Image (cartoon, rainbow, N blue to C red):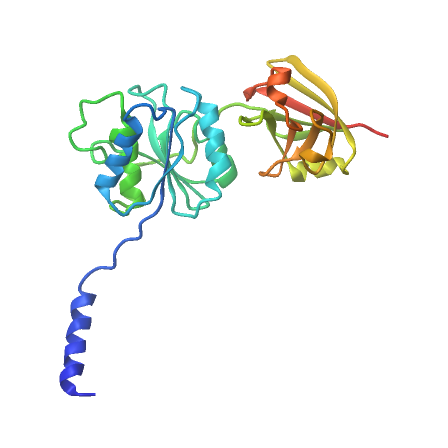
Amino acid sequence: MNNRYVSALLILCAVFSAFPAHAAEHALVLQTDFGTKDGAVAAMHGVAFGVSAKIPIHDLSHENTPYNIWEAAYRLKQTASFWPAGTVFVSVIDPGVGTERKSVVLKTKSGHFFVSPDNGTLTLVAEELGIETVREIDETKNRRPGSEKSYTFHGRDVYAYVGARLAAEVITYAEVGPVLPATVVMLPYERPRLEGAELVGTIPYLDFQYGNIWTNLDDTLFARLQPKYGDRFHVRIIQAGKTIYTGEIPYARTFGDVPEGAPLLYLNSLMNVALALNQGDFARKHGISYGADWSVRVEKIKP
């Protein structure tokens, strides 16, 4: 090869090596109870886009029940593990906005980041993915410039801004703020367990579109009852100590395995025990809702 070309190539290599490699852009996933009827969510998108136009911004949900922290916690649990490590979640269900509750970033052992008020929203992802570190957001350094006098829209001015800066690697996790004890505010609820021959758990959420009842009883725990398709189970649903529903329900593989309108017990897409009516709305028919004060008890009926 001609020496002149070799020299030119060496010069080009030197020039390109002088520029730092571009930081990776991680996904930013937003959750709020703002709804989409006004510009609040778009404002959060705009703040993130202003940090970096290359951030992939996605919406988990903005139709959460207003002020319902438990619902926010479950939606994070339902979603987070399907996203790659490095994903930054911003969750703003914040009835205490502007008060002394802490604004934090949780880094889980799975490598995900959660930017949120520390008000219980992080309960379930902390349990499922594990806490590696918790940092308090230092708002003297990590707050949208010019927003210092705004006290009621931290979703835009603090959380979206910090989440975008983390996702774009404009700041490191260490630059978020000081390290806190490796714990977050935990909401009380019925932990899944086996009591004698009976499984005990909670109803964390409903499959709203169809009215199916989702529980936190996973397939591993359920397997301890040695279920077989066609087995019948006695089910009780309780709210705040009051029995709302009791019945005998067959274990089925899928909805069409029982007659239309009939109940079934099945494993849902998260591999948790769930209850449904084939082409019907179980929750509406029996007046059942969800949350930390709703519990479920399931026992296999002996032949």
